[in-house]
Image 1 (cartoon, rainbow, N blue to C red):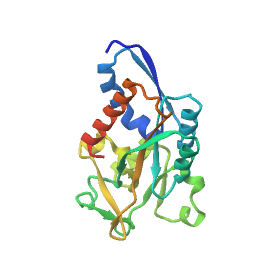
Image 2: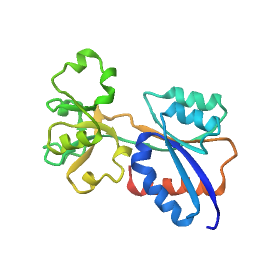
Image 3: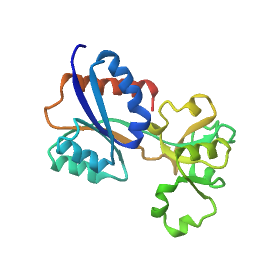
Image 4: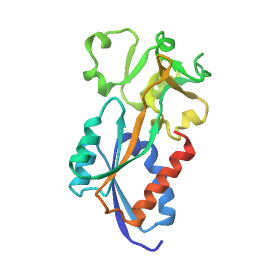
Length: 219
């Protein structure tokens, strides 16, 4: 459509790295003259950016066990928000792992393998856990991927993080639903936040485009 504008989006790293690039590409086929600025922020900062008019749309990822304070903050700031979808928790394994063909996998079944964690969370890991022989820290996501491909361990992530992942699509890694005590582990919820009654029609189209892509990918 022949409209010129700038759409400012604040989102978490998972959204910025995995979902938004495809969404922007599809959206700009219909709106080629709309510039899109994306800001990668933590969930609390996303809410503040919307409140202070630094962003038009925000995407926050809220765990059912954590980040409930983010929901409280959105209510206190009188912002409009809605849940877009709930994603599952998966164990990311090498395709060569004996567990890669399973329909689901539990913590007990994974206990003999090293758990690979991002080095950024090392300072938050309790000393007794950190010293465990089955914990390995990866420098970044690329290093983690290489370790998993070599069957040197596994990691636990939101299925949203594996959206259109090349290695999963090529069958080199497997994302297996993770269960706890015979029940599916609590997942992550993706929420949209914006100022009340202020969405423009093209902003609504952007959200619809993202929703359609996520539904098609079955994250």
